[in-house]
Amino acid sequence: MMELKTAASIDAMREAGRVVARALTAVREAAAVGTSLLELDAIAHDVLRAARAGSPFLGYRPHFAPTPYPAVLCTSVNDAIVHGVPDGYRLRDGDLLSLDFGAELGGWVGDSAVSTIVGRPRPEDVRLVKTAERALEAGIAAAVVGNRIGDIAHAVGTVCREAGYGIPDGFGGHGVGRRMHEDPAVPNEGRPGRGVPLRAGMVLAIEPMVIAGGRDGYHTAPDGWTLRTDDGSRAAHAEHTVAITERGPRILTAL
Ligand code: MF3
Ligand code: CO
Image 1 (tube, rainbow, N blue to C red):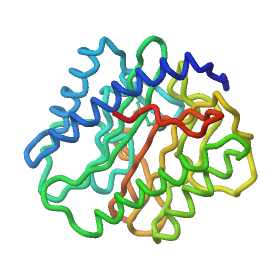
Image 2 (image 1 turned 45 degrees about the vertical axis):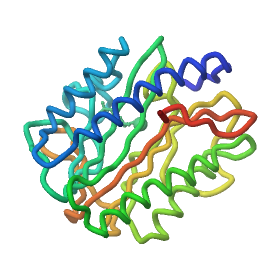
Image 3 (image 1 turned 90 degrees about the vertical axis):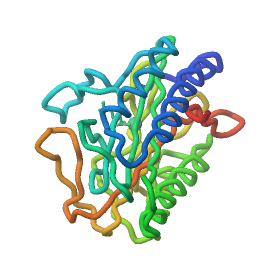
Image 4 (image 1 turned 60 degrees about the vertical axis):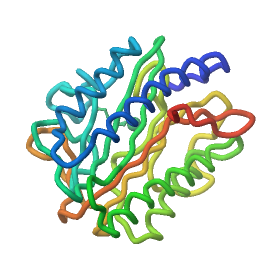
């Protein structure tokens, strides 16, 4: 399903997106050495409750998942790429933590992710995180009327490959609206000028993932959710929900 959103709907999605941004900011500030991943999930849950918003993650069960998702937040540490399930693990100095969060407000969903480094950062991790952010910026800049999905995919993929990183294929961005995952798929690599034409009113979650080792291989951990790199190298993830408008891309999940 691909529903074009009216200006009023996009404004309503912005309110859902603001809740997402507030939660990610709160969680990121709390992510210090010694904090557990379950504590971070509880902080995100508190933000939802205060906003009277729902969670599109909790209980979610996509085709690849063996069990409903048990939390409101994804916490992916080091070699975990995405969909890390919060548990009692306590963060350690230098951990690379990717946080992915969604909120549902007024019937609309916002979806966003950030990567952060706990304690003293390693330079190679800083470069990895910055590359995911730059890839996201490039993807957003390509999210304009007249372009196609392939232009976003190409913009994202080029930044990641030029930095020498791997890209896990099979996972990427997506349309977002009344539901978290709508058409079209927004791959993190692709050919310019191909795919669905971008139209005003489309809302997309653009979400580059980069693997430090330079290879693309990944696997699902025994929990059935966490995606881990095959080579054990670290991964970073960045995501925004973005509306395509006649006046250019509008980020809905910023503060
Ligand atoms: N941003 C992630 C995605 O689009 C959200 C996953 S939610 C989960 O895949 F519930 F599946 F964890
Ligand atoms: Co997403």
